[in-house]
Image 1 (tube, helix red, strand yellow):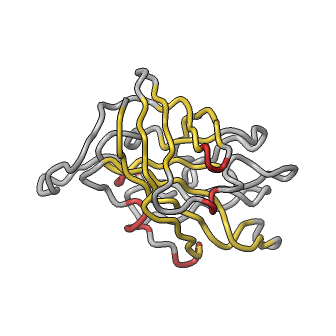
Image 2 (tube, rainbow, N blue to C red; image 1 turned 180 degrees about the horizontal axis):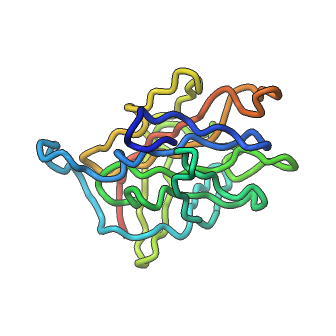
Length: 195
């Protein structure tokens, strides 16, 4: 991910070829005074601690991700195949706005936490347990793959008046020369319930 000074682009890949696209700083919080009024439920800020997606067998802890020196979001460590990361300087899952959750599709040695992410379809649910003891339940709106060469930054990272999440991983063919996948898979979801 790139910072707010330039249009965001998907991150370059690691040697494992599976670094997901990440959120730009500008998508982290609503800032324009003319932004639409909030829609639907929203929660106070709280760091996520666990992601549960029963349909695809995900039950994973979170790690904080930050924008690195390249201007892209650093990926989760590749040595833990059951770990997701969130853009910690951005919107937390459940807050109004767009929260970014990234995970590897695979590593050099094994499938990773988001290996089955493409199986999610509209209407599927997943939960984010948060540090304050609450749980945010999200409903999938859409799942799309985008070429990294033509990634729709505004659509993926734009701030929203309701609480939304983007689950992002790599997809498409693996380009051995570039050491990267050719696409990013993005799951678009909105907050449906809190507990």
